[in-house]
Length: 223
Length: 223
Image 1: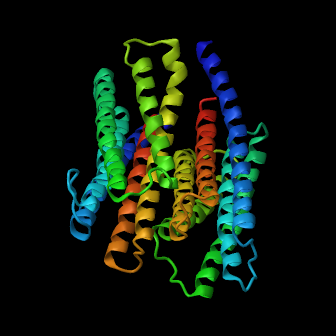
Image 2: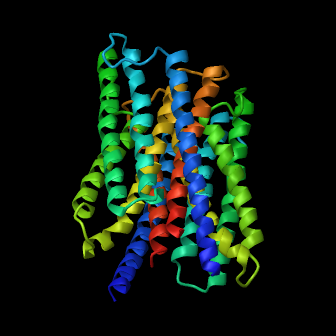
Image 3: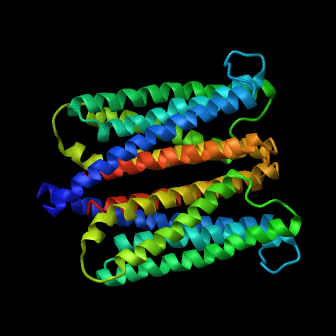
């Protein structure tokens, strides 16, 4: 009885946290667009202005990759639907995240080549490529193990690794986003103006999105 | 039988992961010292050379704060000892982390004041202060709720929040460390030399320490 009481309370908490996660994700997307459209040069993957090409990178890596993947994690754990439906939504959102992530990565490389910068020298790029590669491996592994219907020995053995691996990848993706914002703000020597504060608040929203996704998925496990 | 089989397997995995976490933590500490002693100016909190004062900050924030706190998390979950002993070790290591963290924060402020830089403008500083404040709140809350012997309604209600809050704080601390390294490397305009690579590898080791602590604590829950 007491245990049931706690469980339903944690379940309600997990639902509220999912709402909080949606809100921080949407807020971060809006702040990102304000930054790129108002303070920067706008977004255009095919532009001759290399800066407009670059700006596609932070937008797609957050909205396309991190936000979609976070929603995919929460969809599996917190939506009230048939297990097969949740599994398909989880898989499909992650596929969208992967495709948009590839376009976002392409934008960064295209920008570097346009302005003659070396690729892959910074901590941001090292963690980012590592995260994306492991993400693709996790997606393919998940497909191979969990797509077949029915229960199996291998599903039960791999599930905790899949769950914790996904959470670790979210942590890595958030770290990558924040090091990217940090690199950009430092190299632009922003300090006390509105743009600097906007970037800091954007970074906090991305961090809080990650934490609320993590909380809502973890607490749903208690439900 | 099958479930027991999985549990003991996860328990063994959690122990191996704890070893991996120790290794990455020690490796990161060594790389940090190589960086600060060989490539930078060394460490001295009382120096007239502001750079030597600054260098105390990254060392204590990783070795003193993050490493100690990570060890405290793993000590509670993975050491085979009486519950009261594990609880005390957990509490005490976190106290050490808090004290060394305060000295490490002091070093950053002292450096800024010595060279006339503004405090608290970067994303790194915002996340860092947020993390440290919440860490202190979590420690005091944990003390109030979990120090009294015996089981209670409030302990059961708060435990999942304490556990997930601690994991979120670890995520935040790792993000803070990596943004700090990113800020330093970008402002020094390091790109292709040995120091740049050393900092990147240091950042990766700190990230892998965080992930392996998180995995070892999470998988131990299945054990």
